[in-house]
Every structure is written in structure tokens, then in C-alpha cells.
Image 1 (cartoon, rainbow, N blue to C red):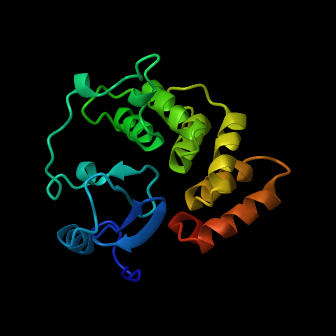
Image 2 (tube, rainbow, N blue to C red; image 1 turned 135 degrees about the vertical axis):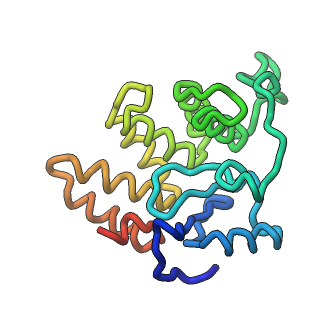
Length: 201
């Protein structure tokens, strides 16, 4: 993956890419196009601007590169059929459904629905879903703000060595009295594992 270059981050934004739980980047738009052309970047991979908060699907962030028919709301399963284990979505599918509702991709935007699907995936050990659920609780985004729940889910994701969870724990603990040392430890972990926000601290 290309090394980070000094750029005007407003005129020439850089991006982070998340594939199978690992984070690559930063990449400029030209490098994103090369990854897409070589088949190394898929429409369902996750991407976010370097220094921004939320992950998005590549086909949402780069509609010109990834042209794919939007799924009609009626075709998205809201819940598995009772007594039909074979119909149960995988943890990854539940996470993707949560992401769709979080950003309103082909369905009405609903943070509460997103939280429900994130929780289903998180309870099955999906690290990014655990982190995203923690973010909803920490920020109180249309769900009750609950820092204790945010901590629980960030810690679960951190146990799986998700660098963004280390960063979010550093933010959470940084706002808590008596936990500054913990905040510093997680900040260092995040910085050493490629989180740009942590490197700026």
C-alpha cells in the first residue's frame, strides 16, 4: 500500500480502506481508482476519509467507480424467520444491514434499526459491529447515550485488536476522571496501529 504523502487534505482528501477487518491507507483518489481497476477493492469494502469518523461502503463513497443497483427495501430481511436456522443471516450480513440502515442505503435511514442489527452481529463476535454499536451509545445517536454500554462494546472489539476500538476507548477514557492513564495507553496502541486521529495527538 502506498506510503502517506503530504497533501492538502481539503483539496486532495486521503482515505482509509477496511477489508476483512484490516485497515490500509491512506490512499488518494487516484490510488483508489487503481485498486478498483486491479480488483483489489470491492463495492462492499469499507472506506472513510482520513481523519473522519464513520465508515461507509465504497459504492456509496465513490458512486462513479462502483455502479451497482440499489437493493429495494422490501428485499432486505428485517429479521430471520422463527424456527428457520438456515434463514439466519451471518454476522457479516447483519453488520452490513446495520450499515445500510445507519446511512440509509436503499432503506429509510434508521439509527434504531442500525443499532438492532449491529447488536445482533456484535453479540456474535463481529468486531466492527461491536465498535459501531459502541459509537452509537457513546454519541447518543438516536439511542440513549450510555457510556457504560459504549465501554463494554469498545472493549470487546479491542480484545479482537480492532485499532479503531482502541482509538474510541482513548476518547471515552479521556473524558473520564481517573482514567487518563488508560486513555494514554489506548491512544498509543491506536497510533501504533495506523489510526491517523491518534497520531495527531
